[in-house]
Image (tube, rainbow, N blue to C red; front, side):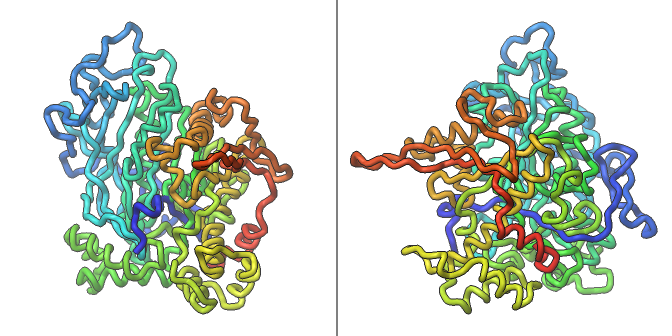
Length: 594
Protein backbone atom coordinates (compact mmCIF):
# COMPACT_ATOMS: atom_id res chain seq x y z
CA UNK A 1 0.00 0.00 0.00
CA UNK A 2 1.20 3.52 -0.77
CA UNK A 3 0.77 5.77 2.32
CA UNK A 4 -1.43 8.82 1.84
CA UNK A 5 1.24 11.13 3.21
CA UNK A 6 3.75 9.94 0.62
CA UNK A 7 1.43 10.68 -2.25
CA UNK A 8 0.46 14.27 -1.49
CA UNK A 9 -2.60 12.35 -2.45
CA UNK A 10 -4.93 11.82 -5.30
CA UNK A 11 -7.98 13.93 -5.82
CA UNK A 12 -9.99 14.39 -8.99
CA UNK A 13 -11.77 12.09 -11.35
CA UNK A 14 -14.24 11.80 -14.34
CA UNK A 15 -15.13 10.38 -17.80
CA UNK A 16 -17.65 9.76 -20.54
CA UNK A 17 -18.87 7.84 -23.65
CA UNK A 18 -21.62 8.77 -26.08
CA UNK A 19 -25.29 7.88 -25.95
CA UNK A 20 -28.11 10.19 -27.04
CA UNK A 21 -28.22 13.88 -26.25
CA UNK A 22 -30.86 15.04 -23.79
CA UNK A 23 -32.13 18.60 -23.91
CA UNK A 24 -31.57 20.48 -20.68
CA UNK A 25 -34.42 21.41 -18.38
CA UNK A 26 -36.90 24.15 -18.79
CA UNK A 27 -39.13 24.95 -15.85
CA UNK A 28 -36.67 26.16 -13.24
CA UNK A 29 -33.19 26.95 -14.52
CA UNK A 30 -30.61 24.72 -12.88
CA UNK A 31 -32.93 22.16 -11.25
CA UNK A 32 -33.17 18.75 -12.84
CA UNK A 33 -35.20 15.70 -12.06
CA UNK A 34 -35.55 12.42 -13.88
CA UNK A 35 -39.00 12.06 -15.53
CA UNK A 36 -41.32 9.43 -14.15
CA UNK A 37 -42.63 8.30 -17.50
CA UNK A 38 -40.56 5.85 -19.53
CA UNK A 39 -41.79 7.56 -22.67
CA UNK A 40 -40.00 10.72 -21.59
CA UNK A 41 -36.62 9.02 -21.25
CA UNK A 42 -33.83 11.51 -21.80
CA UNK A 43 -36.04 14.57 -21.27
CA UNK A 44 -36.03 16.80 -18.23
CA UNK A 45 -38.56 18.51 -16.03
CA UNK A 46 -38.43 20.76 -13.02
CA UNK A 47 -37.44 19.11 -9.77
CA UNK A 48 -40.14 18.32 -7.21
CA UNK A 49 -40.89 20.84 -4.52
CA UNK A 50 -39.64 20.65 -0.96
CA UNK A 51 -38.70 17.23 0.34
CA UNK A 52 -41.39 15.65 2.52
CA UNK A 53 -39.00 14.43 5.19
CA UNK A 54 -38.77 17.06 7.87
CA UNK A 55 -35.74 18.12 9.83
CA UNK A 56 -32.42 19.66 9.06
CA UNK A 57 -28.95 19.02 10.38
CA UNK A 58 -27.68 21.82 12.56
CA UNK A 59 -24.06 22.60 13.33
CA UNK A 60 -25.43 22.32 16.75
CA UNK A 61 -23.17 23.54 19.56
CA UNK A 62 -24.71 26.53 21.27
CA UNK A 63 -21.42 28.37 21.29
CA UNK A 64 -18.47 28.31 18.94
CA UNK A 65 -15.73 25.96 20.04
CA UNK A 66 -13.13 26.37 17.30
CA UNK A 67 -9.92 28.12 18.17
CA UNK A 68 -10.01 31.66 16.88
CA UNK A 69 -13.70 31.57 16.12
CA UNK A 70 -16.32 33.64 17.87
CA UNK A 71 -20.10 33.50 17.72
CA UNK A 72 -20.10 37.00 19.12
CA UNK A 73 -21.51 39.89 17.11
CA UNK A 74 -19.43 40.95 14.15
CA UNK A 75 -17.52 44.22 14.02
CA UNK A 76 -19.70 47.30 13.98
CA UNK A 77 -21.87 47.54 10.89
CA UNK A 78 -21.63 50.40 8.44
CA UNK A 79 -24.46 52.28 6.84
CA UNK A 80 -25.42 50.94 3.43
CA UNK A 81 -24.20 47.35 3.87
CA UNK A 82 -25.04 45.39 0.75
CA UNK A 83 -25.40 42.08 2.57
CA UNK A 84 -28.84 40.95 3.56
CA UNK A 85 -27.40 39.26 6.63
CA UNK A 86 -28.23 40.91 9.95
CA UNK A 87 -25.00 42.64 10.98
CA UNK A 88 -25.39 42.00 14.70
CA UNK A 89 -26.30 38.31 14.58
CA UNK A 90 -24.81 37.26 11.21
CA UNK A 91 -28.12 35.61 10.36
CA UNK A 92 -28.90 34.89 6.71
CA UNK A 93 -32.19 33.72 5.19
CA UNK A 94 -31.55 31.00 2.57
CA UNK A 95 -35.13 30.18 1.72
CA UNK A 96 -35.84 26.99 3.65
CA UNK A 97 -34.38 28.32 6.92
CA UNK A 98 -32.11 30.92 8.51
CA UNK A 99 -28.47 30.31 9.44
CA UNK A 100 -26.38 32.20 11.96
CA UNK A 101 -22.69 32.43 11.18
CA UNK A 102 -19.63 33.51 13.16
CA UNK A 103 -16.48 35.61 12.90
CA UNK A 104 -12.88 34.35 12.99
CA UNK A 105 -10.69 36.98 14.60
CA UNK A 106 -7.53 35.19 13.47
CA UNK A 107 -8.30 34.97 9.76
CA UNK A 108 -10.68 37.94 9.58
CA UNK A 109 -13.28 35.77 7.88
CA UNK A 110 -17.00 35.72 8.46
CA UNK A 111 -18.10 32.11 8.20
CA UNK A 112 -21.26 30.07 7.77
CA UNK A 113 -20.47 26.34 7.96
CA UNK A 114 -22.64 23.26 7.63
CA UNK A 115 -25.52 24.80 5.68
CA UNK A 116 -27.69 22.12 4.08
CA UNK A 117 -28.29 22.59 0.37
CA UNK A 118 -29.92 19.26 -0.52
CA UNK A 119 -31.88 16.33 0.89
CA UNK A 120 -30.66 12.84 -0.07
CA UNK A 121 -32.78 9.94 -1.25
CA UNK A 122 -30.51 7.01 -2.09
CA UNK A 123 -29.79 6.56 -5.81
CA UNK A 124 -32.02 9.54 -6.68
CA UNK A 125 -31.32 13.18 -7.41
CA UNK A 126 -31.28 15.27 -4.25
CA UNK A 127 -34.12 17.70 -3.59
CA UNK A 128 -34.35 21.00 -1.75
CA UNK A 129 -34.16 20.65 2.05
CA UNK A 130 -37.42 20.75 3.95
CA UNK A 131 -38.35 24.05 5.56
CA UNK A 132 -37.08 24.46 9.13
CA UNK A 133 -38.40 27.18 11.40
CA UNK A 134 -36.14 29.23 13.61
CA UNK A 135 -32.46 30.02 13.25
CA UNK A 136 -29.93 27.23 12.73
CA UNK A 137 -26.37 27.65 14.02
CA UNK A 138 -23.83 27.38 11.20
CA UNK A 139 -20.74 26.96 13.39
CA UNK A 140 -19.13 23.76 12.07
CA UNK A 141 -18.90 21.85 8.81
CA UNK A 142 -21.55 19.21 8.18
CA UNK A 143 -21.07 15.46 8.55
CA UNK A 144 -18.77 14.02 5.89
CA UNK A 145 -20.06 11.91 3.06
CA UNK A 146 -18.93 8.27 2.97
CA UNK A 147 -15.15 7.83 2.69
CA UNK A 148 -13.86 4.89 0.64
CA UNK A 149 -10.35 3.59 -0.03
CA UNK A 150 -8.87 2.99 -3.46
CA UNK A 151 -7.13 -0.21 -4.47
CA UNK A 152 -3.50 0.12 -3.37
CA UNK A 153 -3.79 3.57 -1.76
CA UNK A 154 -3.91 3.87 2.01
CA UNK A 155 -6.50 6.45 3.07
CA UNK A 156 -9.01 6.74 5.93
CA UNK A 157 -12.16 4.65 5.59
CA UNK A 158 -15.32 5.56 7.52
CA UNK A 159 -19.06 5.59 6.80
CA UNK A 160 -19.75 9.27 7.33
CA UNK A 161 -23.46 10.00 6.96
CA UNK A 162 -25.89 9.58 4.10
CA UNK A 163 -27.42 13.03 4.64
CA UNK A 164 -24.22 14.90 3.84
CA UNK A 165 -25.09 17.64 1.35
CA UNK A 166 -23.70 20.70 3.12
CA UNK A 167 -21.72 23.72 2.05
CA UNK A 168 -19.75 26.50 3.72
CA UNK A 169 -19.46 30.20 2.91
CA UNK A 170 -16.46 32.37 3.86
CA UNK A 171 -16.54 36.16 3.53
CA UNK A 172 -13.40 38.29 4.10
CA UNK A 173 -13.91 41.10 6.60
CA UNK A 174 -13.10 43.69 3.93
CA UNK A 175 -16.18 42.60 1.97
CA UNK A 176 -18.66 42.54 4.83
CA UNK A 177 -20.17 45.91 4.02
CA UNK A 178 -18.98 46.40 0.48
CA UNK A 179 -21.44 48.08 -1.85
CA UNK A 180 -20.01 46.14 -4.80
CA UNK A 181 -20.95 42.45 -5.13
CA UNK A 182 -17.80 40.34 -4.76
CA UNK A 183 -16.47 37.58 -7.05
CA UNK A 184 -17.24 34.07 -5.81
CA UNK A 185 -15.08 30.95 -6.05
CA UNK A 186 -16.60 27.51 -5.37
CA UNK A 187 -14.10 24.85 -4.24
CA UNK A 188 -14.86 21.25 -5.29
CA UNK A 189 -12.65 18.82 -3.36
CA UNK A 190 -10.90 15.87 -4.96
CA UNK A 191 -10.43 12.30 -3.81
CA UNK A 192 -11.15 10.01 -6.75
CA UNK A 193 -14.93 10.34 -6.45
CA UNK A 194 -14.62 8.04 -3.45
CA UNK A 195 -12.93 10.10 -0.75
CA UNK A 196 -12.65 13.68 0.45
CA UNK A 197 -14.37 16.67 2.03
CA UNK A 198 -13.74 20.43 1.82
CA UNK A 199 -10.64 20.53 4.04
CA UNK A 200 -9.37 16.98 3.42
CA UNK A 201 -6.20 18.17 1.69
CA UNK A 202 -5.67 21.48 3.49
CA UNK A 203 -7.64 24.51 4.58
CA UNK A 204 -9.21 25.80 1.38
CA UNK A 205 -9.55 29.35 2.67
CA UNK A 206 -5.74 29.62 2.90
CA UNK A 207 -5.84 30.23 -0.85
CA UNK A 208 -7.41 33.59 -0.04
CA UNK A 209 -4.07 34.74 1.45
CA UNK A 210 -3.07 35.92 -2.02
CA UNK A 211 -6.49 37.39 -2.69
CA UNK A 212 -6.31 40.60 -0.61
CA UNK A 213 -9.78 39.96 0.76
CA UNK A 214 -11.54 40.47 -2.56
CA UNK A 215 -13.33 37.13 -3.07
CA UNK A 216 -15.99 35.08 -1.29
CA UNK A 217 -15.27 31.34 -1.07
CA UNK A 218 -17.81 28.52 -1.01
CA UNK A 219 -16.76 24.92 -0.30
CA UNK A 220 -19.09 21.99 -0.93
CA UNK A 221 -19.61 18.31 -0.18
CA UNK A 222 -21.12 15.82 -2.62
CA UNK A 223 -21.99 12.13 -2.54
CA UNK A 224 -19.08 9.74 -3.11
CA UNK A 225 -18.41 6.12 -3.98
CA UNK A 226 -21.40 3.83 -4.45
CA UNK A 227 -23.75 6.46 -3.03
CA UNK A 228 -22.69 9.04 -5.59
CA UNK A 229 -21.53 7.10 -8.64
CA UNK A 230 -22.93 3.55 -8.70
CA UNK A 231 -24.18 2.69 -12.19
CA UNK A 232 -25.83 -0.20 -14.03
CA UNK A 233 -28.97 -0.76 -16.05
CA UNK A 234 -31.19 -0.95 -12.95
CA UNK A 235 -29.81 2.33 -11.62
CA UNK A 236 -30.41 3.94 -15.00
CA UNK A 237 -33.98 2.66 -15.21
CA UNK A 238 -35.15 3.37 -11.66
CA UNK A 239 -32.68 5.89 -10.28
CA UNK A 240 -29.80 8.03 -11.50
CA UNK A 241 -26.10 7.65 -12.20
CA UNK A 242 -23.56 10.45 -11.69
CA UNK A 243 -25.35 11.70 -8.58
CA UNK A 244 -22.24 13.40 -7.25
CA UNK A 245 -22.26 15.65 -10.31
CA UNK A 246 -25.96 16.40 -9.90
CA UNK A 247 -25.20 17.31 -6.26
CA UNK A 248 -22.60 19.80 -7.45
CA UNK A 249 -25.11 21.39 -9.83
CA UNK A 250 -27.61 21.64 -6.97
CA UNK A 251 -24.96 23.37 -4.83
CA UNK A 252 -24.21 25.79 -7.67
CA UNK A 253 -27.94 26.50 -7.99
CA UNK A 254 -27.95 27.30 -4.24
CA UNK A 255 -25.01 29.66 -4.76
CA UNK A 256 -26.76 31.36 -7.68
CA UNK A 257 -29.91 31.93 -5.62
CA UNK A 258 -28.43 32.85 -2.23
CA UNK A 259 -24.85 34.13 -2.50
CA UNK A 260 -26.03 37.74 -2.88
CA UNK A 261 -27.23 37.54 0.73
CA UNK A 262 -23.56 37.15 1.71
CA UNK A 263 -22.36 39.96 -0.56
CA UNK A 264 -21.43 37.75 -3.50
CA UNK A 265 -22.06 38.34 -7.18
CA UNK A 266 -24.07 35.43 -8.67
CA UNK A 267 -22.98 36.56 -12.14
CA UNK A 268 -19.25 36.27 -11.32
CA UNK A 269 -18.74 32.69 -10.13
CA UNK A 270 -15.69 30.49 -10.70
CA UNK A 271 -15.73 26.76 -10.04
CA UNK A 272 -12.35 25.43 -8.87
CA UNK A 273 -11.19 21.89 -8.26
CA UNK A 274 -8.11 19.71 -8.06
CA UNK A 275 -7.85 16.08 -9.20
CA UNK A 276 -11.37 14.58 -8.90
CA UNK A 277 -12.56 18.09 -8.10
CA UNK A 278 -10.93 19.28 -11.33
CA UNK A 279 -12.43 16.29 -13.09
CA UNK A 280 -15.79 17.32 -11.66
CA UNK A 281 -15.21 20.81 -13.04
CA UNK A 282 -14.46 19.19 -16.40
CA UNK A 283 -17.71 17.22 -16.28
CA UNK A 284 -19.66 20.32 -15.31
CA UNK A 285 -18.03 22.08 -18.26
CA UNK A 286 -19.47 19.49 -20.65
CA UNK A 287 -22.72 18.74 -18.78
CA UNK A 288 -25.86 18.57 -20.94
CA UNK A 289 -23.77 19.17 -24.04
CA UNK A 290 -22.94 22.72 -22.98
CA UNK A 291 -26.58 23.82 -22.73
CA UNK A 292 -26.13 25.33 -19.24
CA UNK A 293 -24.02 28.10 -20.73
CA UNK A 294 -23.07 30.71 -18.12
CA UNK A 295 -26.26 30.40 -16.06
CA UNK A 296 -24.56 29.01 -12.93
CA UNK A 297 -20.87 29.87 -13.35
CA UNK A 298 -18.69 31.80 -15.74
CA UNK A 299 -15.09 30.74 -15.00
CA UNK A 300 -13.43 27.41 -14.27
CA UNK A 301 -10.06 26.47 -12.73
CA UNK A 302 -9.14 22.83 -13.28
CA UNK A 303 -5.90 21.77 -11.56
CA UNK A 304 -4.97 18.25 -12.77
CA UNK A 305 -8.36 17.23 -14.21
CA UNK A 306 -8.76 13.56 -13.34
CA UNK A 307 -10.31 11.40 -16.04
CA UNK A 308 -10.51 7.78 -14.90
CA UNK A 309 -11.91 4.94 -16.96
CA UNK A 310 -15.41 6.06 -17.83
CA UNK A 311 -17.78 3.44 -19.12
CA UNK A 312 -21.26 3.68 -20.51
CA UNK A 313 -23.67 3.10 -17.62
CA UNK A 314 -24.49 -0.50 -18.64
CA UNK A 315 -21.04 -1.65 -19.77
CA UNK A 316 -19.87 -4.93 -18.19
CA UNK A 317 -17.59 -3.30 -15.62
CA UNK A 318 -20.12 -0.94 -13.93
CA UNK A 319 -22.81 -3.60 -14.23
CA UNK A 320 -20.53 -6.07 -12.45
CA UNK A 321 -20.02 -3.55 -9.62
CA UNK A 322 -23.79 -3.24 -9.26
CA UNK A 323 -24.34 -7.00 -9.30
CA UNK A 324 -21.58 -7.46 -6.72
CA UNK A 325 -23.27 -4.89 -4.47
CA UNK A 326 -26.46 -6.96 -4.67
CA UNK A 327 -24.63 -10.09 -3.53
CA UNK A 328 -22.86 -8.35 -0.65
CA UNK A 329 -26.11 -6.81 0.64
CA UNK A 330 -28.31 -9.91 0.09
CA UNK A 331 -30.41 -8.08 -2.49
CA UNK A 332 -30.34 -10.61 -5.32
CA UNK A 333 -34.12 -10.99 -5.55
CA UNK A 334 -36.32 -9.75 -8.41
CA UNK A 335 -36.80 -6.26 -6.93
CA UNK A 336 -33.09 -5.77 -6.27
CA UNK A 337 -33.06 -1.99 -6.84
CA UNK A 338 -35.68 -1.37 -4.15
CA UNK A 339 -33.85 -3.73 -1.79
CA UNK A 340 -30.52 -1.97 -2.32
CA UNK A 341 -32.18 1.43 -2.01
CA UNK A 342 -33.51 0.48 1.42
CA UNK A 343 -30.59 -1.60 2.73
CA UNK A 344 -29.07 -0.35 6.01
CA UNK A 345 -26.68 2.50 5.35
CA UNK A 346 -23.61 1.08 7.10
CA UNK A 347 -23.88 -2.40 5.55
CA UNK A 348 -24.24 -0.76 2.14
CA UNK A 349 -21.19 1.36 2.87
CA UNK A 350 -19.02 -1.61 3.87
CA UNK A 351 -20.13 -3.53 0.77
CA UNK A 352 -19.04 -0.58 -1.36
CA UNK A 353 -15.79 -0.32 0.58
CA UNK A 354 -15.06 -3.98 -0.12
CA UNK A 355 -15.59 -3.50 -3.86
CA UNK A 356 -13.47 -0.36 -3.99
CA UNK A 357 -10.46 -2.16 -2.53
CA UNK A 358 -10.83 -5.44 -4.42
CA UNK A 359 -12.48 -4.95 -7.84
CA UNK A 360 -10.95 -1.61 -8.79
CA UNK A 361 -7.80 -1.27 -10.90
CA UNK A 362 -4.70 -0.22 -9.00
CA UNK A 363 -4.95 3.35 -7.67
CA UNK A 364 -8.66 3.78 -8.38
CA UNK A 365 -12.06 3.55 -6.75
CA UNK A 366 -14.83 1.25 -7.99
CA UNK A 367 -17.56 3.82 -8.64
CA UNK A 368 -16.80 6.57 -11.14
CA UNK A 369 -18.80 8.83 -13.46
CA UNK A 370 -20.30 7.11 -16.49
CA UNK A 371 -21.70 8.16 -19.84
CA UNK A 372 -25.44 8.08 -19.26
CA UNK A 373 -26.88 10.06 -22.17
CA UNK A 374 -28.48 12.45 -19.71
CA UNK A 375 -25.95 14.69 -18.05
CA UNK A 376 -22.79 13.21 -19.62
CA UNK A 377 -23.35 12.70 -23.32
CA UNK A 378 -19.87 11.94 -24.72
CA UNK A 379 -16.32 11.18 -23.63
CA UNK A 380 -14.25 14.31 -22.84
CA UNK A 381 -12.17 13.73 -25.96
CA UNK A 382 -15.35 14.20 -28.01
CA UNK A 383 -17.23 16.63 -25.78
CA UNK A 384 -14.51 19.22 -25.17
CA UNK A 385 -14.74 21.29 -28.31
CA UNK A 386 -15.66 24.95 -28.85
CA UNK A 387 -19.39 25.49 -28.80
CA UNK A 388 -20.09 22.40 -26.66
CA UNK A 389 -19.01 23.64 -23.23
CA UNK A 390 -20.50 25.53 -20.28
CA UNK A 391 -18.89 28.62 -18.79
CA UNK A 392 -16.90 31.30 -20.57
CA UNK A 393 -13.32 31.21 -19.22
CA UNK A 394 -10.97 28.30 -18.49
CA UNK A 395 -7.69 27.99 -16.56
CA UNK A 396 -6.44 24.40 -16.77
CA UNK A 397 -3.15 22.72 -15.99
CA UNK A 398 -1.30 19.69 -14.71
CA UNK A 399 1.92 18.66 -13.00
CA UNK A 400 4.91 17.14 -14.76
CA UNK A 401 4.78 13.72 -13.06
CA UNK A 402 1.07 13.08 -12.53
CA UNK A 403 1.21 9.37 -13.31
CA UNK A 404 3.72 8.22 -10.69
CA UNK A 405 0.95 7.86 -8.09
CA UNK A 406 -1.30 5.77 -10.33
CA UNK A 407 1.08 3.29 -11.98
CA UNK A 408 1.54 0.07 -10.04
CA UNK A 409 5.05 0.14 -8.49
CA UNK A 410 5.33 -3.62 -9.04
CA UNK A 411 5.61 -3.14 -12.80
CA UNK A 412 9.00 -4.44 -13.92
CA UNK A 413 8.68 -6.74 -16.94
CA UNK A 414 6.79 -6.27 -20.19
CA UNK A 415 4.36 -8.94 -19.03
CA UNK A 416 3.59 -7.07 -15.82
CA UNK A 417 3.19 -3.82 -17.76
CA UNK A 418 0.66 -5.45 -20.10
CA UNK A 419 -1.17 -7.04 -17.17
CA UNK A 420 -1.53 -3.66 -15.47
CA UNK A 421 -2.66 -2.01 -18.73
CA UNK A 422 -5.29 -4.70 -19.34
CA UNK A 423 -6.71 -4.24 -15.84
CA UNK A 424 -6.95 -0.49 -16.37
CA UNK A 425 -8.28 -0.53 -19.95
CA UNK A 426 -10.03 -3.90 -20.35
CA UNK A 427 -11.87 -2.92 -23.55
CA UNK A 428 -8.71 -2.05 -25.51
CA UNK A 429 -7.62 -4.73 -27.97
CA UNK A 430 -4.17 -6.32 -27.82
CA UNK A 431 -3.39 -4.78 -31.21
CA UNK A 432 -4.18 -1.27 -29.99
CA UNK A 433 -2.24 -1.88 -26.80
CA UNK A 434 0.84 -2.75 -28.86
CA UNK A 435 0.45 0.54 -30.73
CA UNK A 436 0.32 2.34 -27.39
CA UNK A 437 3.71 0.98 -26.36
CA UNK A 438 5.18 2.16 -29.65
CA UNK A 439 4.21 5.68 -28.58
CA UNK A 440 5.82 5.06 -25.16
CA UNK A 441 9.01 3.15 -26.16
CA UNK A 442 11.13 1.56 -23.47
CA UNK A 443 14.30 3.29 -24.64
CA UNK A 444 12.77 6.68 -23.90
CA UNK A 445 12.34 5.99 -20.19
CA UNK A 446 15.32 5.46 -17.94
CA UNK A 447 15.80 6.33 -14.27
CA UNK A 448 18.00 4.89 -11.54
CA UNK A 449 15.05 4.85 -9.12
CA UNK A 450 12.48 3.13 -11.33
CA UNK A 451 12.29 0.39 -13.93
CA UNK A 452 11.82 1.50 -17.51
CA UNK A 453 8.49 -0.28 -17.79
CA UNK A 454 7.13 1.35 -14.64
CA UNK A 455 8.04 4.77 -16.06
CA UNK A 456 6.29 3.90 -19.33
CA UNK A 457 3.14 3.09 -17.39
CA UNK A 458 3.45 6.24 -15.30
CA UNK A 459 3.87 8.38 -18.42
CA UNK A 460 0.86 6.79 -20.10
CA UNK A 461 -1.54 7.11 -17.16
CA UNK A 462 -0.30 10.64 -16.50
CA UNK A 463 -1.06 11.63 -20.09
CA UNK A 464 -4.36 9.85 -20.48
CA UNK A 465 -5.71 10.74 -17.05
CA UNK A 466 -4.50 14.34 -16.54
CA UNK A 467 -2.32 15.91 -19.23
CA UNK A 468 -4.60 15.39 -22.24
CA UNK A 469 -7.78 16.52 -20.47
CA UNK A 470 -6.01 19.75 -19.46
CA UNK A 471 -5.11 20.44 -23.10
CA UNK A 472 -8.64 19.67 -24.26
CA UNK A 473 -10.14 21.98 -21.65
CA UNK A 474 -7.93 24.92 -22.59
CA UNK A 475 -8.55 24.41 -26.31
CA UNK A 476 -12.33 24.12 -25.92
CA UNK A 477 -12.80 27.80 -25.14
CA UNK A 478 -12.86 30.71 -27.58
CA UNK A 479 -9.65 32.53 -28.43
CA UNK A 480 -8.45 34.64 -25.53
CA UNK A 481 -10.56 32.86 -22.91
CA UNK A 482 -8.63 29.65 -22.21
CA UNK A 483 -5.34 29.46 -20.26
CA UNK A 484 -3.02 26.47 -19.83
CA UNK A 485 -0.07 25.78 -17.51
CA UNK A 486 2.37 23.01 -16.53
CA UNK A 487 3.52 22.87 -12.90
CA UNK A 488 7.06 21.57 -12.30
CA UNK A 489 7.47 22.65 -8.66
CA UNK A 490 9.38 20.21 -6.44
CA UNK A 491 8.59 16.56 -7.20
CA UNK A 492 5.64 17.65 -9.38
CA UNK A 493 3.83 14.43 -8.39
CA UNK A 494 0.05 14.39 -8.43
CA UNK A 495 -1.32 16.38 -5.50
CA UNK A 496 1.98 18.04 -4.57
CA UNK A 497 0.56 21.43 -5.58
CA UNK A 498 -1.97 21.26 -2.74
CA UNK A 499 0.81 22.41 -0.42
CA UNK A 500 0.98 25.65 -2.34
CA UNK A 501 -2.75 26.15 -2.51
CA UNK A 502 -3.56 25.51 1.15
CA UNK A 503 -0.54 25.09 3.44
CA UNK A 504 2.36 27.46 2.93
CA UNK A 505 4.15 26.07 5.99
CA UNK A 506 4.72 22.83 4.09
CA UNK A 507 6.40 24.50 1.13
CA UNK A 508 10.18 24.74 0.83
CA UNK A 509 11.39 28.25 1.61
CA UNK A 510 13.27 28.52 -1.68
CA UNK A 511 10.04 27.72 -3.52
CA UNK A 512 7.89 30.41 -1.90
CA UNK A 513 7.93 32.45 -5.09
CA UNK A 514 6.44 29.45 -6.86
CA UNK A 515 3.39 29.63 -4.63
CA UNK A 516 3.15 33.35 -5.23
CA UNK A 517 3.06 32.84 -8.98
CA UNK A 518 0.84 29.78 -9.08
CA UNK A 519 -1.74 30.77 -6.45
CA UNK A 520 -1.46 34.45 -7.32
CA UNK A 521 -2.30 33.74 -10.94
CA UNK A 522 -5.28 31.63 -9.86
CA UNK A 523 -6.70 34.32 -7.58
CA UNK A 524 -6.21 36.86 -10.36
CA UNK A 525 -8.17 34.58 -12.68
CA UNK A 526 -11.17 34.19 -10.39
CA UNK A 527 -11.26 37.97 -9.87
CA UNK A 528 -10.79 39.13 -13.47
CA UNK A 529 -10.64 36.03 -15.76
CA UNK A 530 -7.00 36.96 -16.43
CA UNK A 531 -4.18 35.20 -14.49
CA UNK A 532 -1.76 38.15 -14.73
CA UNK A 533 -3.74 40.91 -12.99
CA UNK A 534 -2.53 40.04 -9.46
CA UNK A 535 0.45 42.17 -8.26
CA UNK A 536 2.04 38.93 -7.00
CA UNK A 537 2.57 37.88 -10.61
CA UNK A 538 3.56 41.25 -12.00
CA UNK A 539 5.85 41.02 -15.00
CA UNK A 540 4.33 37.71 -16.10
CA UNK A 541 2.89 37.87 -19.60
CA UNK A 542 0.61 34.85 -19.45
CA UNK A 543 -0.99 34.70 -22.87
CA UNK A 544 -4.21 32.79 -23.56
CA UNK A 545 -3.89 29.30 -24.99
CA UNK A 546 -3.03 29.27 -28.69
CA UNK A 547 -2.25 25.98 -30.41
CA UNK A 548 0.07 27.68 -32.88
CA UNK A 549 2.52 29.41 -30.55
CA UNK A 550 4.76 28.34 -27.66
CA UNK A 551 5.65 30.84 -24.96
CA UNK A 552 6.38 31.68 -21.37
CA UNK A 553 8.49 29.55 -19.08
CA UNK A 554 8.94 30.96 -15.59
CA UNK A 555 11.97 29.98 -13.51
CA UNK A 556 13.27 30.17 -9.97
CA UNK A 557 16.68 29.60 -8.41
CA UNK A 558 17.10 26.46 -6.34
CA UNK A 559 20.13 26.76 -4.05
CA UNK A 560 21.67 23.80 -2.23
CA UNK A 561 23.62 23.80 1.05
CA UNK A 562 26.84 24.91 -0.65
CA UNK A 563 27.21 27.69 -3.14
CA UNK A 564 25.80 26.00 -6.21
CA UNK A 565 22.75 27.45 -7.86
CA UNK A 566 20.68 26.14 -10.73
CA UNK A 567 17.66 27.58 -12.42
CA UNK A 568 14.61 25.39 -12.91
CA UNK A 569 11.36 25.93 -14.73
CA UNK A 570 8.60 25.72 -12.16
CA UNK A 571 5.53 26.87 -14.04
CA UNK A 572 5.22 26.79 -17.81
CA UNK A 573 2.38 28.17 -19.89
CA UNK A 574 2.41 26.46 -23.26
CA UNK A 575 0.42 27.07 -26.40
CA UNK A 576 2.00 24.31 -28.43
CA UNK A 577 -0.16 22.01 -30.51
CA UNK A 578 -1.89 19.09 -28.83
CA UNK A 579 0.71 16.40 -27.99
CA UNK A 580 0.71 13.40 -30.31
CA UNK A 581 -0.14 11.15 -27.35
CA UNK A 582 -3.37 13.12 -26.86
CA UNK A 583 -4.22 13.08 -30.56
CA UNK A 584 -3.85 9.30 -30.46
CA UNK A 585 -6.07 9.14 -27.36
CA UNK A 586 -8.80 11.16 -29.10
CA UNK A 587 -8.69 8.66 -31.97
CA UNK A 588 -9.06 5.54 -29.82
CA UNK A 589 -11.25 7.10 -27.12
CA UNK A 590 -14.43 5.22 -28.02
CA UNK A 591 -12.80 1.83 -27.44
CA UNK A 592 -11.07 2.61 -24.16
CA UNK A 593 -13.53 4.11 -23.07
CA UNK A 594 -11.27 6.85 -21.81
